[in-house]
Length: 377
Image 1 (cartoon, rainbow, N blue to C red):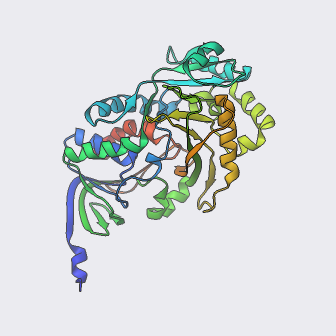
Image 2: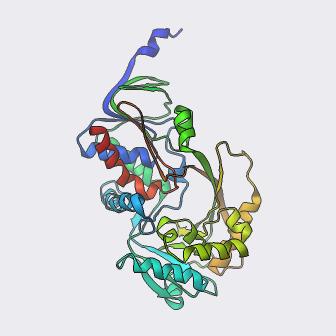
Image 3: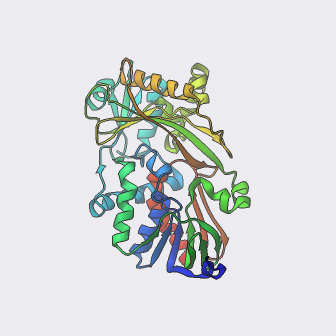
């Protein structure tokens, strides 16, 4: 019989204890190791299985604005470094934004004018040269600074690289209680100089009042992996006119509200499900397509197949394909709130960090050093 006192044993100790081994948590571990800190990471699953592995693998740096653009710019440098040092797959292939209407191209013209060569306008023919698209393309833009990684490989490669640099991982270990200087887990207590809670959409499981004040909800996505209908290598990520409604850099363009109004009037079902019509190609040649967005504090557990039908139909139209063969389907979940970044200090030496805008892969590696600067101060 296990003594009650065994639960008081010390499991570990470190300068920084991070709860959560998704990309946000690992980004803080990278920044801490670079500063010579000792680091422990606590993860409830035996490996990362959340939003960090269920996304497009798209470093969508250029389309951000404000703080997100600052974080993204720094994150790009970090991703390039990690690709070399951690051995993760990365392509500096950029993004092609496809415009299939004049008002979509007008937004891209305004966007390109503000980005000093970071967005190159393309006519319809040059779009078709770069990516497979169906008829009706009037033009587009190439964002050369964007990158692609394989999300199913990247976070695991970073975790392995961190372990090789002395970071200690406690997998399949739940954090039950966080206090200044202490994290109590399902396996014992960990002494902490500082703590970063990087638990994504589960902030409310640990700090419900904080989550309520932030208006935190869960955003549920529908995504699919399909066979490439053209058998063609697609280097860039591909965005569409629907994407112009979702990224901060495009939303700041003066003509974007008129585009939104037109799409909402002509495609109320697609805008109503929050369609961000885009795709990326995986290293094996298949395409990741999506995605839809639904919001709730507690989402319904039932998936509506109508969402997948919309994604498949619109993706086929964008690709100029008769039909798409589905290999996999999945639900992604990430934290959502009005402020795209939740950074809070619920107690001394503890920071709660959640990217509440679906751009964790794009920004986390730039955000984390600023959080550690704040903790150090």
